[in-house]
Image (cartoon, rainbow, N blue to C red; front, top):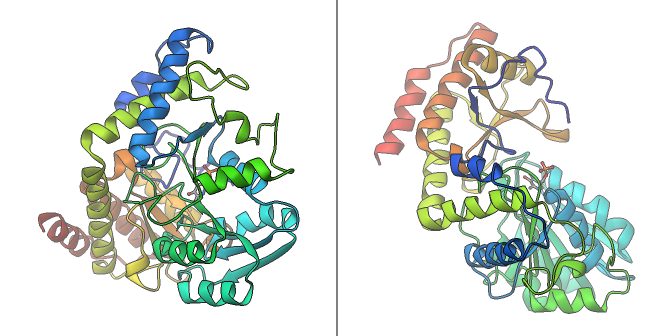
Length: 394
Ligand SMILES: *Cc1c(COP(=O)(O)O)cnc(C)c1O
């Protein structure tokens, strides 16, 4: 979607978006490395080492799969691989991405159902339990963990437990939450989880990262409709991680180098430390937003994401004018809403290199300043910054 920032064509000084985000410096350097021939034995070895590093970062026992396109490819591939003809499918919708996923699932499913809640709320696990109890043959359930255009989290651990007990397979879109917060992928029973390096890992958009349980692999292999010899094929890439195997087609060499650097950064900083600074930045941001008299989008702060803060737009404030003003006066670029949340909220990303609490202070200043200038009613930026500081100081 066009963010209509045409009025401010100068590059942003601070990109505080919800993805893609600017990359870590070491990631940017890695993109400039020589692009090796993919069948050069040193690249085959390198690819294997990157997938092993990725497995460690994901904290899983099976081998992850990298697909060579930004995470939307992985999401579509997951639907095509996991949904077999005749399957009863349940899609959980609490936002724009959840709703969008239904567009892929619906034509593939034998029977298609959705549980929908308002886009400022989260799915209630009890509703999932009730649905599955009434539809025992449900084969696949899909949920978006962090529906980014709402900045809200769904309770995937609780949902996962219910789906696992029922025996259905669970697809999880964790594109904008993984690497920004703890996700116990196997513990929650995610059978096919899709994420990407272009959000909290601070890498460029170009790859999909998928984790598959043994049950998910078995389903793919038994599914006559699971893509083969296709850009959407997960099966084609199953053994590509092995240096002895090679690739179904050319991998994105430069982006694999970038992913390698992003993983090094994540693992050396330690995932726990990375999650902690995401959480701290979001808490500082939320405290500041409230102290300036603005309202969070999430109806319950407990479901507000640590990787993105969505702020409800006051009546009469146009999001494009607001973001243009933020860019023009402060050099700060933030994200708009999407589809149903467009012009209802604005979003500040706390992802990877921008998940440091001082960026919350910066975002509060730009947001409060621009909004005050637009409406003619100054906001108390001092109160916002002070509240953020209290969080930072603990
Ligand atoms: C970013 C994102 C994706 C991938 O979509 P993009 O085209 O990279 O924006 C998928 N799901 C979620 C929840 C995301 O935040």
